[in-house]
Image (tube, rainbow over all chains, first blue to last red; front, side):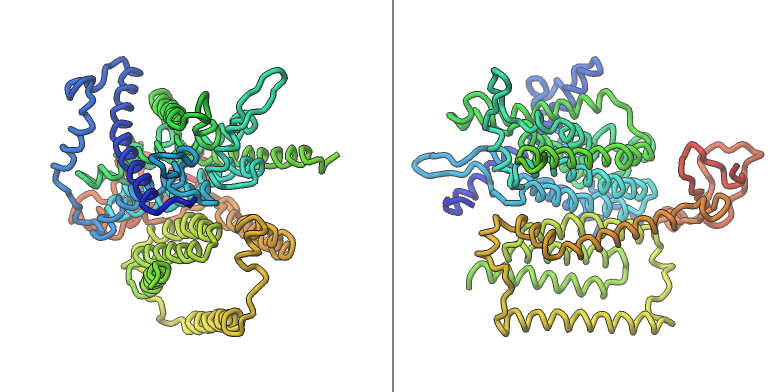
Length: 347
Length: 236
């Protein structure tokens, strides 16, 4: 945890929480706007300038709605299932690094809540608990569509979590660490490529893993074209059919937080995190680069949703087990092989 | 009282309570949720002991994969139709008692030798730090000292996977099998709607292929949905 007093950690965590919750609200605005442009509309405009107050209006509306509980529901489980999704989604932010240690008002401040030495696995672990929110929510609703959504979600998340994990192994082999901070700072270094000095971003040395990671991340966050658990056209919103008001909002927001976290996670792992021009000298620039990269990812998410139709369920599972998993294993084998060549242990 | 002790007390109390919940709760899904809570608290204890890697693996593997599959299965079962657990199965009961006792003795021996007799294993905190951390230490030990056990475990898992495929493959049992699986939730629409077309399919089925539903819904297991045949037909 570095050498900072605990109250500074609390302040950093607090600031990150506030920023995350605000940006989550504005991700919904961003998605509406971008999606509207894709569909030749203009999106929200009435609430505030350029519809910027739309998330606020949504929040007020959702809080004012009646919280319905179906008669067939398992009440206790129905109550706390959305919270699991929401809390675990936020929890993952604890290991995302926003920079190194800086001097601020005479105090040294770590720009990360915690530097867990298994940080990358921690994010996978929060994701694997988060799926319980979906499964239990679907089961406890006492509704066939919800149960089917929950079952699909269980199968989908288990399959794609495997690929998500496997796609990271290449990076672990290269860096020899699972700490996100160390992985990020390894990418601040430059490597010479002929006459050029280029950044050592892992998207360059691990392109296959990057593609696998992005596909698995979309599936893991239940976003289109892998939004089978929701599938409004066949399962009438799947596991969240019976949810209303704030409990529905918790699922909704949990999904958006997962999107943001996955974008930050992918930027940190493959696109150098805070690395960029001037980032090593001025730390706010580093944060800006990370945010810009994450926004690019979020745009990609929305782009996918606007462009691709939903997969059929068997196609989804076939893709995971017959295509992505062998590719992920191939990537691990290749990375290990080149690592051995680099160490001079082969030939 | 240090914070560490407070957290230890909280986590272990939660672990014991949820552990009791697993066997005491009547609804199997509630038991499974209790087990999730138990595993998360065990992971928390691992992290407190400085074994973050084990803690995270506990969550990813046991909570995130194994228990999801268990929940997956029991979600489809109507808890009201479950056979009584203990009735008429003294064998099951005795075997579980014996296995439980053996595990308990094992745990006791480990605690006595490690703590009471102060025969602490070679992997002290200093040793682990010297090896480069938790992950590195576990990796080295697992792939050198326990390499054989590691390989045997992977073999056992492979056998398990092959077995599951063989058992799950409907075509193996001759013709295409019709398997009945209740998709109904325990207190789902079936009970909520007092009367009405319970078993009618919303899909349009040609009259000559229509088979009047009897009792529970039939689910046809095929390898490929494109080869779906209606329950009335036989496979080609």
